[in-house]
Length: 181
Image (tube, rainbow, N blue to C red; front, side):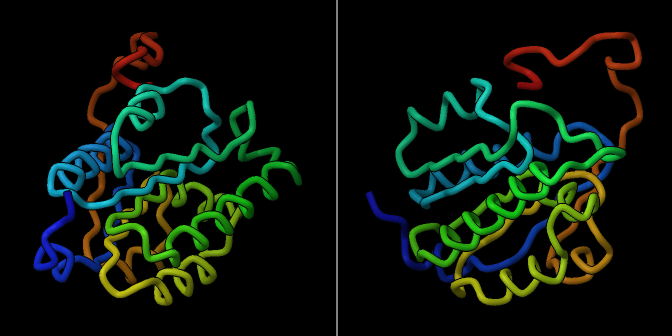
């Protein structure tokens, strides 16, 4: 089933979900479900996240009109010791984002953890802004991750900051399958 063209005409904003609280990717996935429910085509490229069988990756294989590409090495990036491989993986992810974003196939495009990649200088903020300016007119874009640069906050149409007040990590509870992954 195709999306209503009137729905597509209203798309085209840039949203940012940032901050040190939990819920940025989760909010983007909630928006993804809403878009899919309205027959929109959705893509999500995840920076610095390898395919580790996350719930969203497994589910993406079962949903029509949803493409999810994890793009990361098999280790977490250490911001105090960023490697050439880390930089190249992030640059490769950005090239893939641009290719897919400009393809005209997607109505909603989520670029997960790109704020971290910009904040850690793995990709250039000006290159990201130029890419966003050149995208097809009616593609809604969501940028997630901590450390959203000021230039991105200024450029975006909507910015939401998730603020941590309390977290189970503080009690030694790590990521739980089905909740955090």
